[in-house]
Image 1: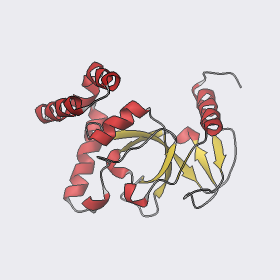
Image 2 (image 1 turned 120 degrees about the vertical axis):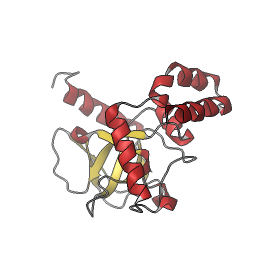
Image 3 (image 1 turned 45 degrees about the vertical axis):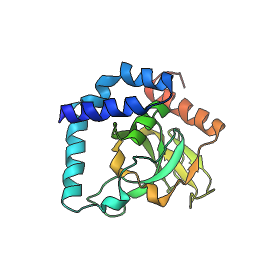
Length: 182
């Protein structure tokens, strides 16, 4: 399996036109050709579920779909429970997002949104706009990883955070991690 990941990685690097991104890919080769046990387990479980027909394969996969930090998409956060499809904000950097688009990386750092408006220090409110149907809060203390097969690109991009919103969420995350004093 590692040999096929290596081959896919090298093929993606070969096709990359941006020399800075190409250099970044090569410098970070290990994250694309090896997987930590937890990431590998999650990915194998997702593949197993697809093989069992738990997903319509026409709805899955981001290869060719560009995603960017700060965008809000629908994701299936728990394929075993109904009602866990919800909006999430993409929070990983755009270099990793490009690797997802190339199909050589399969994890995305996200934060879920909730339409239950509780407020508080670790939530950030986003008013309904564009294709985001309801006023929601980003649940900043629930940051986590989802497999790229959990994003639902056929439902389309809901909206994108504005620069001041990105700054506010970044500030909240710094508070959560203890990087700034309250």
